[in-house]
Length: 300
View 1: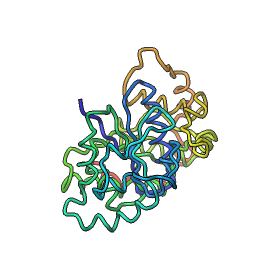
View 2: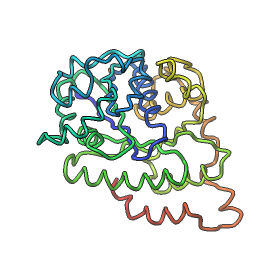
View 3: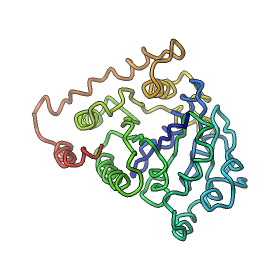
View 4: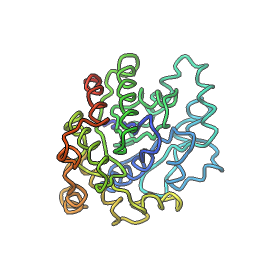
């Protein structure tokens, strides 16, 4: 059986994309799945969060994309329960060097084809921009997971991503589909957070995961220790949220890692309601955005 390849992507930075890639995969690995994390972001944050010293990296995704190393040689064990194809800052140069290849958009897809039978799930952590590296990730993926921080500008970036996905489907990967939208850094005390969450539910419907990823200090601390949050503090709110998200994606756990009470605790904010709409019924900027977004939502 070949792996499910999930690109974790959002063209906007600061939406907990890398945090989601690392901790979701750590949670999936704890379900007994064979997992590979592909770091295709030149910042290498996913690699650092997985315990890889990127300053001493001899072979990584840069060498694989350019054909200077076999993918089997570049994959290493992480500090957690998954393998990783790491990235270092020199990957930034690949954005120019790959332009010389006729198959520049398929370099990652072709490399992963050599190991796809060895894993159940492959997660790709992408750069927070649209470039040849991101296109490689989307061309290789079967699904896209979209982390979204519940704020106005994050929604604007989401519109651009949906348009990009439509272009990739047409030109490179007709099988690409949206796995779902996950709300990150969620703060139910914030009216804007609740309103944006409501708009996401309205326009993506069943594509919005029920699990809410809260703001959590343990999620922020774990990378500095070269660990996933699950390895750093398994029972913190952030870890439990990613376990719940993994359960949503994979299905029931047969009693292992039950987190129903944690999910209820994280979801107790009534996202269908906002104080602003109840009090005044005024159309906000978010509502105006939603009207524009309706024309794009069929890209799903």
